[in-house]
Amino acid sequence: MAKISRGRCRLRYLLARAKTSQAELSRRTGYSRQQISNWVNNREMMSYDAAATVAYALNCQMEDLYELMVLH
Image: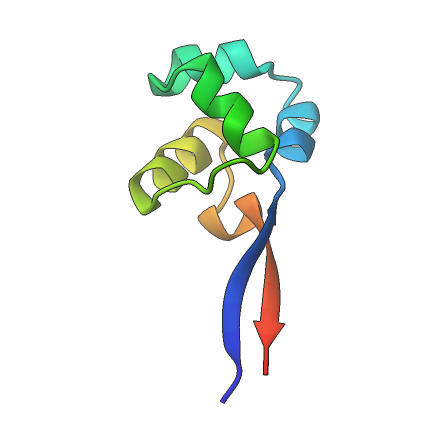
């Protein structure tokens, strides 16, 4: 059976699509601007709770936040 894993974060694209800055997302979610930057630049992966909060703030699905990779 194939396993699905998270790839690169798509937050940069989603912020541009929503015409929202990292600073604005920080204000909406309560996460620091540095934390948002870490996710955008793929230095860290979001926790489940963080992904749910960010998805809600950007009006998207949690699955939209990362490229999905199928591992065989």
